[in-house]
Structure formats: C-alpha cells, structure tokens
Image (cartoon, rainbow, N blue to C red; front, side, top):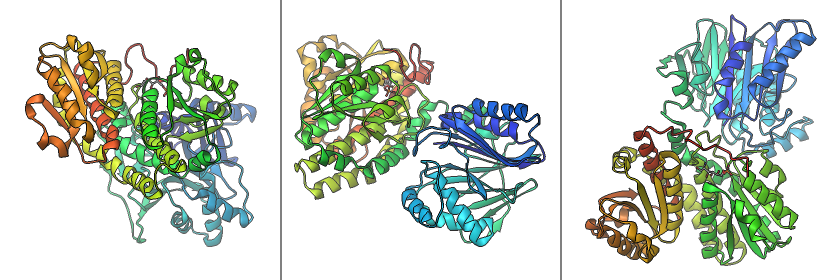
Length: 610
Ligand code: AGP
C-alpha cells in the first residue's frame, strides 16, 4: 500500500502535500516524493528514500541553495511501501517523463511485458519499478493523442493489475488527473481548491467533502472544478459525501484500532500474496536445487507460520523440515552446506534474531530464502532469494494479516516442493492452488462476518487468569499462534497444548470454569479431539469449540459451551479461518480489558535487539 495526495488550487501546495503525506505514512513509509509546478522554475520533482520529513528538507535545501521560495499551487505527492524495486531515491515516486509526472498505488502485473514493448519503441527507463512503466505508457499515448484523458484511458486499457494514479501533464500545470482500478482514491473539494488522496486522513484538515472514485473512473481537477469521466465516457460533477471521522479514526479507515483494520485486510493480503508468490520462480528454484534439508528460522508469529510449512511440506512432499526459534538456531550448531536451504520468515525483515540466523546460515554455506513483508529490509537484502508477502504495512504490533500472508506462502512452498518431488500430481497441485486462491479469502471474510458473535464470546475471558488452546495436527499449530495473540494483547496468561497431551499432566490445571479453546477443524482428527475435549469438559472447563460448520450436527453439544463455526473450506486450509477467529477473540477480549491493543506493553513491532 502507498499513500497518494494531490492538490490544485489558490494556495501554496507544498504545505498541503507534506501534511497530507505525513498522515498517510501508516500506508507505507520507505520513501517519499512530490512533483509540482513552480511558477518560476516550472515542473519540479523532489523525492528520496526515507520519510516525508526528508523530502521537506530537500525543499528547504532547494530554497536555501537557490535563494528563492518555491511558489507552487499544483502538485502531487507519494509515500511508498515498496513492492517492485527496493526503497531507493530512483525508485521513489513521483516518476517523471518529458511530459508527465505520476504517483501510483497498486501493482502493475504486466509491467515487464509493457516495459519490453516500450523499450522496443525506444523509450528508456531509470527505475526498477512497475510505476515508471505506467508513466512512460501515459506519456506515449499523450504524445499520440494530445488529450490527457484519452492518454490515461488508453494506458488503463493496457494495464493489468491495480492502480490509483495521480498525474500532472507538464503542459497543463494547474490540472491534476486521477484514475483508479482496485486501489482506492478519493476526490475532495476544498474551499481553496481540489484534492486527490488515497485516503481520507490526507485531506481531513482541509475539507470534509469527498467523493470516492469508482472503478474505471477518471477525474480531471482544476483549481475551481472537478469533472469525473465514467468508463462509458459520460462526464459529471461528483456529489460529495461528508467525512465524519477524526484524523486518528481516518488513518484506521474508521476502525477503532489498526489490528481490527488489518484483520479485515487479510482476504486482500492473502489474495495479493498468492498472486505474487504463484507468479514467482519458486517452482523452478526447487527444481534446480535438490536440497538435502529444509530449515526454517523465525520468531514469534513468523515461527508459527513456519510450523505450518513443516506440517504441510512433510505431509505433501515427504521432505523433513526443521523449524528453529531463530534465537536458538545458533545453539543447535546447525550442520549446513550449499545443499541445505534455510528459510527466514520475518514480517519486518529486521528482527535481530532472525537476521542473525540468516547470517549464520550463510556462514555455514547454506542457500537462504527470505519470506518478508518489507522490500529492501535487511533480511531481504542479505538472503540469496526472496519471496514477498504483500500484506502491506502492518502497523499493529500483534501480527495478523502478515501471519495470514506468511502461511499463504508456506502452503504454496509445500505444494510446489511436493510437485517437484513427484509426490503429488499436477492435477492435485492445481486443485490445491485453485482452492486456496478461490476459497480462502472469502472464507476469511466469512469469519469476519461473525465478529459480533465472537465479540460476545470475549466476555467469558475477561477476567480469567489463564486460557488453554488445544488441538491436534494443524490445529495444534494454530493453537500456538492463537495463544500468542491472546497473551500479547490481553496480558492473560495462555498456553497452547497438543489436545492428546493434556491428560499427561497439564489437565491437572483444569478446574471449574477454566477456559479452553479447542480447535477441531481436521475432519479425520475430529473424534479424537472431541474425546480430549470431553476430558477437560468433565473436569469443569469452559469450552469454546472451533470447528467446521459442516461438522456441527455430528457433535454432541454437551462437550462445549460455545461453538465458533468455520465456513466450508478444505480441511488443510482451516488455519486461515481458525486463526482469524482467534485473532478476533483476542482483539475483543483486549478491548474489553482496556488494553492498548495496537501497542501492547513491553512489545515492539520489530525486535531489532537479540
Ligand atoms: C507477533 O504478533 C509478534 N508481534 C511477534 O511475535 C513477531 O511475530 C516476531 O517478533 C517476529 O517479527 P518479524 O516477523 O518481523 O520477524
């Protein structure tokens, strides 16, 4: 996700661009830039790797070094969350050609093909980004037609993927053009001019009147007018809605906390991640490298994602996978060579323990693969290979959408390895991939739709001293992540346990009212898990059963006090929906307890110390 802002009007544009970009930095903050029409110097572009404040410093330096004051009333700005091309000055937006300057939020999936075509027509490129391709394409069509709207619409017809564009045509320096497909973009009417923005926070201090551009619509903004053009060419002046949010609420798009917003983003995060990883060369990577061992090193939630990879890879590919807590990796004195693969999973790509494990793996000669959510992060830069999760910035300390994206990668890795090893057929591999792509995002939405009933359940955990999460197979792995979520944001002690193991000691901790969250999503393990549930229920536990809605009728309702029913999904993909339910349960419990959900005590989003 990136942040876009644009303004054309009767007051200076730079303060509005910088102010708007700072309120959008939650959408991405690895680089920033602005392009504007200065009445003395003409079109200018200031951009660099780093935060918005560093671009402000560039503007100050320009004015000092040239003994001048920037005098500009039209401009666009961007704060970046890199997906194609590492964070760098040259990859920062805006991207400029001879005729246009453009900022973009989204992913141009066919940019390589378009880039080759444009290169063949003599166009040059300076960045590694997909966005620059759009800039050159619009430039080309503008050169052909002389009509900005036609140029934008023709380019949009060629682009596959998602985009929200803010565009200035250099020979029309007080106009801004905007277009969107799958990425949000609003138009806002102010008393002193008109705005475009990715999101409401960017304009909230200037106006409360906004219009959400619809799919396929193009907009033309001048200081005194806004015209929207539909896909069928009809033009109209938008009717504005009134913003009722505070700035803080707006950054969360109306959600009370980033964590809840990010849980709601999980379907999109999984969809984007799958799209990216399925178009990667991971299958070829496995075909070219017949590894002796597969090793995973990660921390916390990321390590729990690694456990899913171990389970699925060993089941499908019949290849042993070692999963290490990254901080313990070095003490295992791992025996590694170039015939071994070490996968580092890390949302931030900066976790010191995980980076240390990566460096140790490299010292031992192993091939390394980083599964990260931040382009250009340390792990991404130092690993031999990278697979990106496209969760977008995860602001809340508790990882939710990143975990969902990480396990999406883990499932693809296990299927691809099984295919390469000849353990599963092409047909079966394709059915698994189609299933996860077509059904998982909507199934997660199905859980999110149950949030009110899950919220009601949270009351039962409000004041309990401890909660148990139990399950078998994959459910046991999800129990670990569910337990961590509860601990880190509610401060309630919690323990995840193999359901079959409780009777070997821990069940002594069960007394009247002890909360037990029992995961029973794996059909072929259902009866055994229910047997374990009966063991704790008969000793007074308060049991919440998490199972498939299809199984409810076969369950003796006396074994549990409540049920969270998961939407139909192939059994092995239930971790996506089960964890979404547990994330919501932990979230609502934390809210009821008055905890600082997004910034729990003692925690940091990225633990950069060992
Ligand atoms: C998860 O909710 C925690 N914030 C924590 O366990 C986190 O997963 C761990 O610190 C690893 O972070 P990383 O993915 O950025 O490496």
